[in-house]
Image (cartoon, rainbow, N blue to C red; front, side):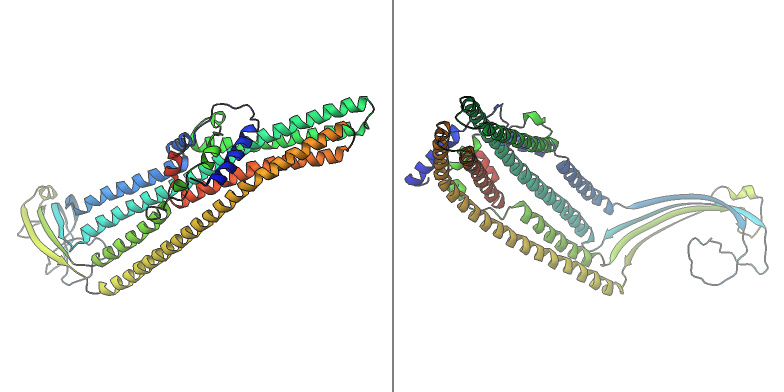
Length: 462
């Protein structure tokens, strides 16, 4: 806990906060409930969750790469059987026609062919496993990206909620300011009727009252806009999104042990995402190596064939070409390896290794940025704490000055300009108090977010 003198200062500050009037308090929405709604409803998170499911489906699909192929083909063909010997390179589909005659013959024959071809890659020296690991690494990257988005959405929701709390309290202060301006106007009207002061002061008071109302309208508009933003993210009706005014006093009185908890940067979502990129790139390096390894395949085929051309080279009626007259099969093991792939593998591996180095540099950059953010939040928290220690003095002095000026004005010993100056000084002191309290709460949550301790901080709130 804080020291006794500091504790007395905080206690006095809290008394001042409680003394400020609140405007139309409705049932507050706890921050935890808002964050639960955001994580459940947020369209951005829903899209990221769908991306994770897509990667998981891709990972499941990689199991199919080990399945064998069994292709069936049947065809009936009509054409000539008039060939010449000689080899050639086949580009595309080349008709098979093996008989060579001494003399050309352009008679048409009819033939049919049925083929069942089977091939199965039995082993590729770890290529299958590398593909599955790469698919799983893609899932991990997408999950890490989802966690990063979840972290960013949570941070935005918390900051917006705190801003909503600030505007809520500022409206309370503005309502109090409007009441003071009304009191001044009533006093001026009474004094003007009795002839103690000039009637022009009434116009000045009306102008100040109107300006206070306009400020209140602007604050109400800003407050409503934030409600609508949070509603769009959480699916909660805007009117239900009312900040809990008890949070600020609770945050101000948290023990040092919670505020100065050890940072958990190892499991930080931002760091975790870039670590997953490194893992993914490293896995793909291995995939690049193994994708150029040899493949051992099992191949088999059975086929049957018939033709209207007989084995004795007789051109029979075309109907004789339907139905199989010969059957064959072939089974074998094959090894496939392109010895010139070594250069391609080397080039692809260089690209992937460069990508790994890039991911490592990005991780180092993010770690450095995160540590800088932690140091900045520590500094902001310290300054915010000192500001809150000083502001009660400003507020007490401003309240005393306003009371004195108001008393002097009602007795005719000062003018409306001096009274308005005292009123503005008090209004600024009250708004400074609200802004300082908001800055402290914001710095505390920034520290918790940077150190991955948000749940610890939320659990400390009632």
